[in-house]
Length: 217
Image (cartoon, helix red, strand yellow):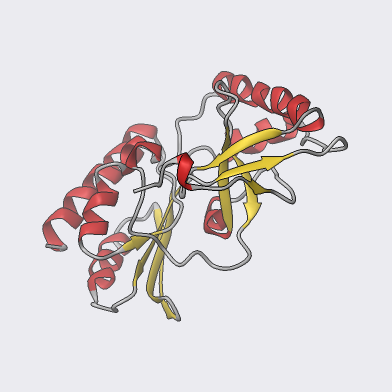
């Protein structure tokens, strides 16, 4: 699980971004949430390498549809990368959340802003008087377009063959695009999923959780 804030020194961040990131690129970035107490938007910094997968996570930070699935994978020795279930398209919600960018921008250009890394709990600080925030109208359009896209990355460092079972299952779903490779991390399975309706998207994650619970024992 994440360490407490007291266990970490504050990291000075060289830059932060909050623009659009395609879902399949999620593992290539570290994700940070502002600590101003009322901001509901994630910022990112380049990871500087491929995510190795992790067996430790504060599950309360995961999307609701992943909170039962991730512990099942972790108990089976399957590490996971930063992931997302996708979200029900809601323009008003997106635009409301994007208002956080303006508030954060004022703080960044002022005395600076503290962030917490959602995966590790590290605390970062960023200040830049000339920081430029993204165009909110363009960002809202892209976020709405891609809001339904879900993504999950899995790593089996011991190459046990467990990911092959999941891969075969995912290939049967026409709304899912899985990829299974082997690299220096081990066996690596990742996929995106976009169902025609949100109710189907929710059911997809529930069904995958049940399948993994049964077949990864």
